Image (spheres, helix red, strand yellow):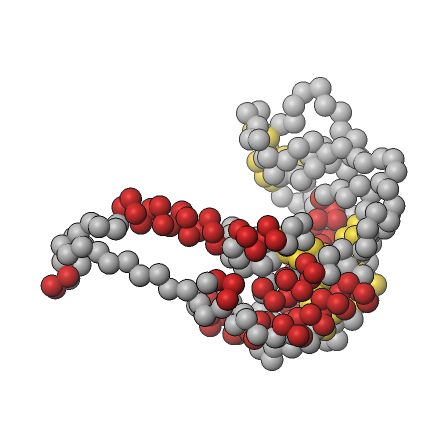
Length: 280
């Protein structure tokens, strides 16, 4: 919930320890030990000012390095240090110290440029860029969030599947093999690279949390609870929201701004769907 406390300017140096995590080797997808705070900005403190919200009076923080859980975030709750028994090895990929998260490096020869063409983006990231970004996010979350005394450990592996094939509904056999590897060899609790339907489905069947499935239906997610998750809303909500708007504002109304003979004629609406069974 947004706070109504007064804003204040704070100084924070961003020097909190990131914790011990794993670093993915960019060339092979292997994992090498990493040091806290390693990388281009790992040494030294970066000073700066930002506007944040004052924590409610009377709260005494349990964290020694900061008052807020996420410094600089106006919606951040107070930082309270976890103590006690976290349950230890509660499930696959989770120990008393770590939560193992997988990152699949696919067999696509040039995945980044393919996605850039599909999305019309000018940003093309190399495999090394993707790995560095993922590891940077892990370091950030390890230094700013608490997982009941645990740290996220990122494990990258070279997969057999190709995203470009899986986007078209193919490559299920390779996706299955990759998911089995994540469950049995990597031993991961979750996979943050499940951006295709075949791979997300395969991970869910292995009881690995699959994060990233793009715009699947509400039923698709319900059928795979609690393992399938996404950054995006489900396509059922999109279809319902857009359908409601079109019916109220567009359908059966004249095309007032159309050109030529179409002007002021009743609008005709068409719906395009990919030739993928999951979207039919």
